[in-house]
Amino acid sequence: MVKRIGVLTSGGDAPGMNAAVRAVVRKAIYHNIEVYGVYQGYQGLISGNIKKLELGSVGDIIQRGGTMLYSARCEEFKTLEGQLKGIEQLKKHGIEGLVVIGGDGSYMGAKKLTEHGYPCVGVPGTIDNDIPGTEFTIGFDTALNTVLDSIDRIRDTATSHERTFIIEVMGRNAGDIALWTGLAGGAETIIIPEEGFSMDDVVARLNKGQERGKKHSVIVVAEGVMSGTEFAEKLKEATDMETRVSVLGHIQRGGSPTAADRVLASRLGARAVELLLDGKGGRAVGIEANKLVDYDIIQALAMKHQVDLDIYRLSKELSI
Ligand code: ADP
Image (cartoon, rainbow, N blue to C red; front, side, top):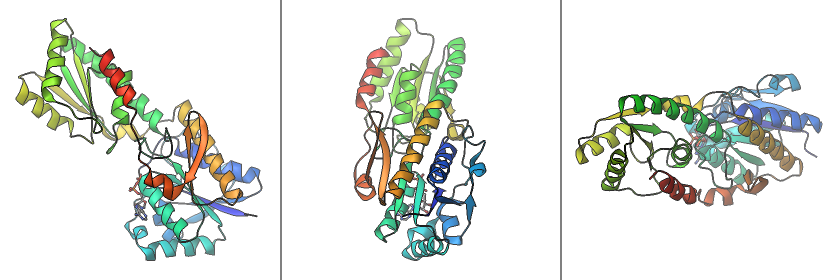
C-alpha cells in the first residue's frame, strides 16, 4: 500500500499545470496518502528541494497560469548519476511514486526513473500538444484562445490598412497551435511542419482573395517551419506584396487556464494518482475521444504524435 507520493512540473510551463498539481494533491489526500511537492523539476529532485503539501498548499491556484512548483531544465538529470541522485532523494523522503507533469523531455526523465525501477506516471503538460498517447495536452486549449485573441485583434488592423499579416506561433516541431488557431481565426493560409507548402500556391491564394475584394489576409506560420520574418522575406521575393509580421512569443505560455484545460488537468492529475495507488508505475496518462487512457510510458514515447490533417484540409476548403 502506497503511503507517500511526490509531484513535480518540468520543462516548458503550461496553463493548467497548477490545476493538475492541485488534483494530484487533493486526490491523494482524499485517499489518505501524503504528497510531497518537488520544486524546480528534476533540478529540485536532485538537490532535494522537496516539501510536504497539504490541502491548503494548493488552494487558490486552479485559476492561475504557470506552476506553483516552478519548472526548470536540468542537464544533469540526463546522466545516470543525476537520475540516481534523484532516486536517492525520493527514497530519503520516503516517496514511493512520482507524478511528472511536463512535455516529452520530462517524459524521458520519467522513463529513465521507470527503467531504474522507480514508479513514475507522466501527465502531459505543454501548450504544444505534441505528446504521443493523448489527443490533447494540458495548456493547449488556453494557448489556442490566447493566440486567437491576438489573431482577432490583428485582423482588425489588417482590415483597416488592407494588409497581409504573417503571425508566427509556437509549437516547437508540431503544427497543432498553428492549425487550430488558423482554422478558428479564419486564416487564409496555415503553414505547418507536417505539410509542405509552395510559395506559388500561397501567392495564388493571396491574389485570388484580393481579386474578390478581400481587404486583408492572415497567414499563420508555425515556428517549426521557419520564423515569421523568414517567411515574409520569402514571400517578398515571390511577390512585391507589403506584409507585416507578428511574433506572438511567450504570451502564448501564460494566462489563466480555460475551463477545458482546468477540467483536463483535474482529470489527468487524479488518474495519475489512481495508477500509483494501484501499483501501476511507468505509465503515461492521456485523453482519447474524451475517455481517460494510459499507456506504458516507454511505449507512449515510441509512438508518434499526429497532427489532425482533416482540420488542415478543412481549413483550406473554408479559406478559399
Ligand atoms: P519538456 O518537458 O517541456 O519537453 P525539456 O525537453 O526541456 O522540456 O525537458 C525537461 C527536462 O526533462 C530536461 O531539462 C531534463 O532534466 C529532463 N530530460 C529531458 N530529456 C531527458 C533524457 N533523455 N533523460 C533524462 N532526463 C531528460
